[in-house]
Length: 221
Image 1 (cartoon, one colour):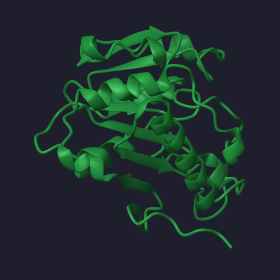
Image 2 (image 1 turned 120 degrees about the vertical axis):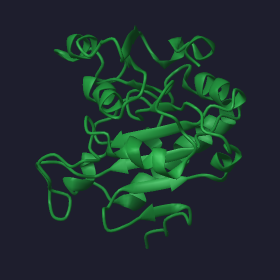
Image 3 (image 1 turned 135 degrees about the vertical axis):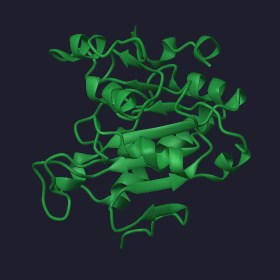
Image 4 (image 1 turned 45 degrees about the vertical axis):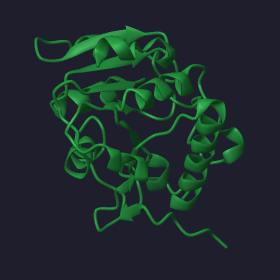
């Protein structure tokens, strides 16, 4: 029997996983946020990760998240999860992986995330998750926009960390200040570095990092 989903998860008619934790209530005045992709950024890349025994933190991820926590910077996960559209796992499996990730973060140094948004849609998928370009699937900014609506977050000064150019482009499309492309996960795949660098503009800054461990919280916030 599958476990019930947490009470703080909203899965409405739009099928987007929206989970805002109690910790987010401490943000009374609007402030910039740190948006993070999950797979290949926080946890090691595993093909369609859905088993708790496969969850492993990338070195330095907990430290960077803890630094953001200490600075009262909202930490928001925005993750595409096309394995749902492909019927490779379900929301209960996704939640089990999330809970294991949260457990590892807390156990390492008390790190925690304030919100999680996940998009199940993909152009090659089964009903109801088949969609050619869903507004919430990165590089579209729908998950970030939901976070802006639900939390006291400003676009100005916010950053996104991802291992794909599409992660950064979602930030660009969402109007935030910049993105950091990491070489973990899919970061070294053909074209990813170049495509990420090409997003650099007068209004959107791009940084190239080996991993999330190189994020300089004090210099970007």
